Length: 415
Image (cartoon, rainbow, N blue to C red; front, top):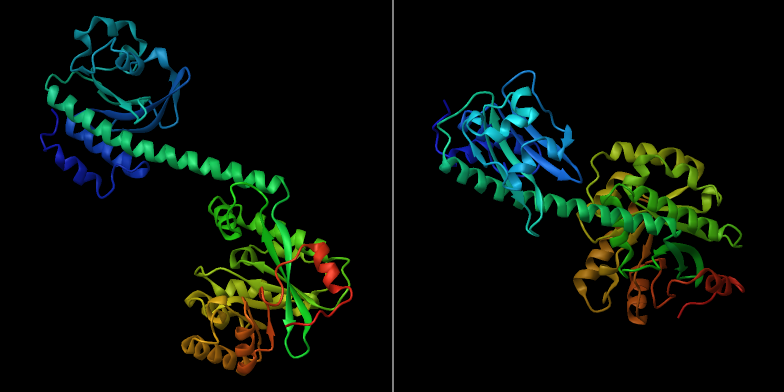
């Protein structure tokens, strides 16, 4: 005899979000099965000529079906229910003569069966939500069937969302894979000037994506990280950047952007052979929380022993960048453009910049101001004692040919 607990208690048994596709679905199916007094509950998915059992719960051993099992659509009850050839509610299979011709009826055996289609929002039938028992259950009624339909609607809503997520994920995979296959990102080079000598002392390598849809580089990198290809895309960018500068004369340093995740992966070491270590600066990017700075320092240690320097990007832009500064003891601290923007007229920006400059001086770190766009900003930064700077006022990011033209003759003077 089935449990007479009210149907709304089933959701409570499943817990918050119980209808989300995943482990909680099994909990809901088991609650429904127990309420009905049935032996097995499952969700099947139709695909081609087969049905696949995506979620299966039950109280019997051995279980006649398990998650991932599949069988031809025309061999079971599911398709017949959807097509209306057998009833959705069958308290006693012996009372429906057509079921005797279906092998499952005797092989399982199936004594009672209740099944409803799961229809997605586009009208397509995803599959079925079913329960069955080994013995007849004459107490099953229309009320139970209506509630099964209600649960099928809720499941369809969640499955729609799950399928949307799968489609979006696949679109991201295809987009990022295409980007990598095209050799993207491409690289532009932005000079970093020493203000006192008015000379180029460094080059920051910046990624650009010549592909649709047009969007900022950080969005491309974020999407690559979402699907597990972030490290690969960063390494592609680093390899392209350093390869482009391999035969470029000069003693300037070369700064490449790298996330903590890529550093922690340990894969970067084999990508830094294009230039002497003393000319390389690894610019730690992102505002994401780093769970274990000890591992990050461990990965950086052998590189630093070889002469590679470390910079922290976007200092002053948020809490995470300051954690990078404190945890990694960088050789260079880069003032974020949100500090340099209008620093000539904004006293709070000047005060915070001055504090970071003093901090850098106390910790023997270099300081570079990013995003300098006006003569007035540059003058204010000089007055604060900033030694090095970059930005559109000094030079926009350049293609490799344009950079070569700037370096030959070397030493273009700043404004």
